[in-house]
Image 1 (cartoon, rainbow, N blue to C red):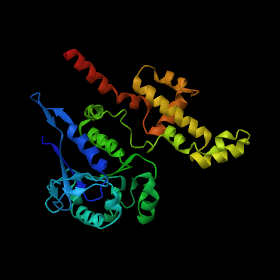
Image 2: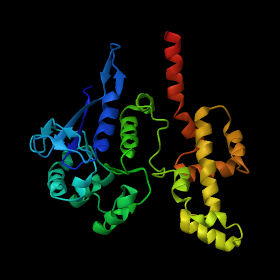
Image 3: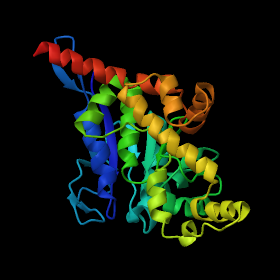
Length: 314
């Protein structure tokens, strides 16, 4: 079986991490062949608008392997985000090229504001998509036929994938690797990249603790004499949710961490983070993360077994 070919489109003003993150993830992925040797799962190429080096927003220069006009057959296409996709002619050139090649590509993904180059093709019309939270409203305004989710980490709708900002490119790449080769390979890549946790696509782009840090400058927290109704109203203005939902999300985040450690039963995890019953916990967990607690925990079995085998072989 030949490595699957992944193409990442490059252009001036690209977000460097949107290219480097997925590129490294796909390059690291390996499987063991029948003869016991390790072989790469993917062939990664950078497709430039021209054959000249292009410069990222950060100033980093990239040399493309090929151009839009000479690109070979691709299994997967990824359109990174960046200022160059939002402003200028790059998005029009990329969109036109995608339209001519889409039927020959198994799956197409945009990262962050790369959606600005994919949406004009019409391929995302009527589909659920996401992008960097900062640009979600603008994407919804400019492309009203898209069903924009302002908060998802990444989404899949048919053969099309869209991801939120920057580091979400790694989460998307890990999901694609798992889709192709299973959770064991994906978790091995996550470990090599020193990713603490392989996040599911439905997870929020930033966590509640981070959101709390960002919004804690609002001095309403010091006004303890507010009435319950006034307090809830002020809380919702600051955190875009009720106090009850905020506390539940904190409990679920901690439960997720404890599930990954495998030191407690699911029932004990539920009670230890404050849920009245494991049934209520299971429903809340699946509603938030899109998977059951038992399924979420099983994702770490492959990593644990892999470590055990390595220790025995030493």
